[in-house]
Image (tube, rainbow, N blue to C red; front, side):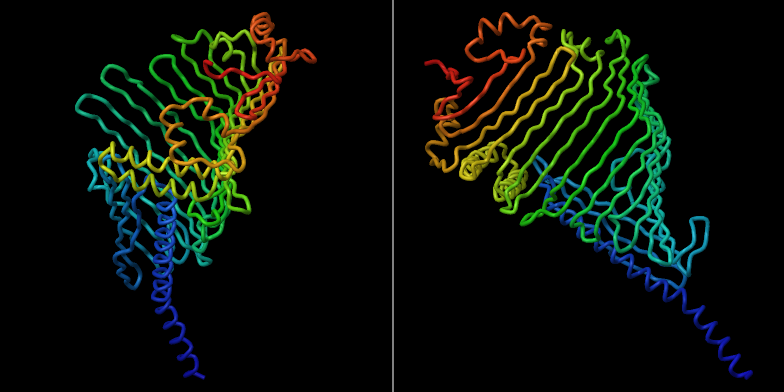
Length: 493
């Protein structure tokens, strides 16, 4: 019995002694996997963005001890400039404590602290090796709790200009196997820029932002969202910009047959107030602004690109614009449809190639030489554009819905294309197009603006007054633009 107890004690001691080594091996594997995933994501970013020539993150060394480890690596980014390739290299050092880890930062498999080495940059002395620190704890289920800290920075230049930043911090939670599903919060402290003559060139007051995302580990699809607290800035004496809330949201997925991402991106600004007593008698208020971009792909791989702007307006903006009409809401929706995937991918490749061309004239010549190919691809695919406009006011509304695109089955050679590019003329362009649309404008709006008599006299044949609205029907056919059935003269006859 005594021997059995001694053996059990020895097994427990051996297991405890081996624990840090086993945990260290697991953390080494996790660290290398994280770097590999980061490098893969950078490669995807480079392929989809013509401004990047190359980008990589590597783990060059990993020294594992019994209770700790030290890793060194390099982040390299090469950007394509107008004249020459530009970029930067940032070495980093990662210190790992395992065994398991128990301390102020939490409890788990390991504590990981990464410091980028910024000494290779021409930066002020106020920015040093402790300015940016990423600290994380990996728990026993491989969840990661991280904190990115930007230390306070105060820099006074020789000319007296001062930048005083109180720092920032981002806290996030994710998982080793899927960093794209996360929750995070960001706290940005006050930023002040001043000089010897003016104590407040700009002051950005503290604000916060909550962020989250859901996605898969291979970066194939996902979604994200973020919401800020009030954001307030002041400039000089009496000038202020206050935004009560900013929101971001969207989704993404890998395009079929290309390296870029499809998806929707939204940004909203709520309760924006701009005060400038010297230029504005009353504060300028915008209750809400929304921006949306969308990139979709059909089953035949054709792309649809769209952008939408929406605004809820305030009488203060109308006063600033001296508008007789009090516009309440406005919306513009622009779509580019039936864009061949090959046109986009070929354009990306061309831009990347031309960005590395040091001679602007040669680059322009190459772009012009390829322009025909792009236009011909759009024409052969019958690419089109749709624009919708809607504005509401107390006096009435403006509505427009117009479609225009290349005529299906159209084909033209390089000589015709060069003629159009050299001397653009409606008589040579209109036969390539088809389109139709409707426009209506309430008479109450034209009455308030004092435009009704002019419209009735000068544009009578192009508008019809129906239900107290001026209505026009547009059509592009047989090389002519028809408005309410009347040809519109587009060029001197």
